[in-house]
Length: 147
Image 1 (cartoon, rainbow, N blue to C red):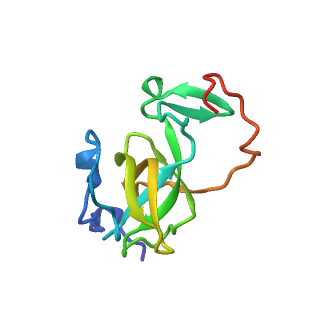
Image 2: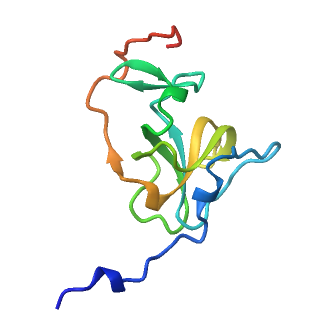
Image 3: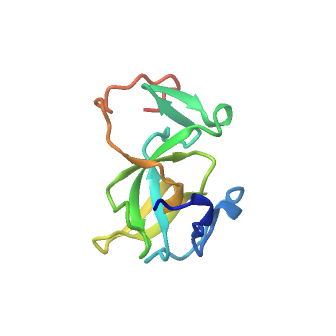
């Protein structure tokens, strides 16, 4: 007998980050050492060095013109309930999800202090998949003179 989708109880993360998408996370004079639940710390790989534009096909597009664009980021840390992604994975997710962060200090998986220039805290349930680059990322067209 097949299951009725209406009878399946939805599960929700204990730390629902969707409530905080309009704020930026900062903790001066501290660094993140561990994450809990299904929280992911990831650094954008599709962003200009100043953090004001996203790269698509080698062209930089101002973020304010595409706030809901799909984003790509590299996973740096994962909480203990993350089952589908691991540090080093590149993930794809809606750009209007998660809590944006800049210049956040954290302890990397090898124990060394590190910093995220432009990144995001995100629940694993917001991730649509793991991705890999299909082109040489060093050959890009820079329309802002920022590369």
